[in-house]
Length: 125
Image 1: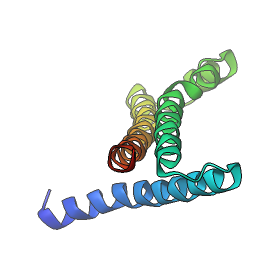
Image 2: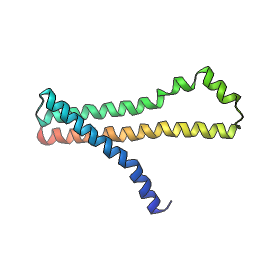
Image 3: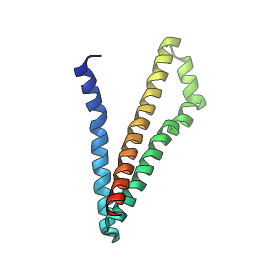
Image 4: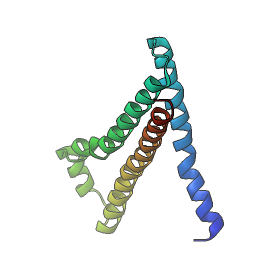
C-alpha cells in the first residue's frame, strides 16, 4: 500500500472518531451544565463515564447480531441458496469485519474520551 493510500485510509478511520468524540464532549458539557455540575472535575468524570459507555457499546456490537444470524430461518436461507462455499465464506468474513471494525472504532472513541477526562481531572482536579 502506498503512503498516500495509507494516509487516506487512516483519515477515513479517524474522521468519524473525531466527530463522535466532539459530539460526546458537547453532550457531556450540556449534561453537566443542565445538571448543575459546573466544575472541571465533574466534566472529567462525565467524559470518563462516556468513554466507558462507548467501549461497552463497541464490544456489544460484536455480539449484537449474533442471535439474528444464528436463527434457523437465517441459517437455512444461507445454506439453501445458490452461493458456493467460497462466496458464503467471503460474505461471512465481510460481516465479521464490519462488526469488528465498528467495535475497534468505538473502542478508540472511548479511550480518547476517557483519556481526556483523566487529563482534565489531573490538571483541574
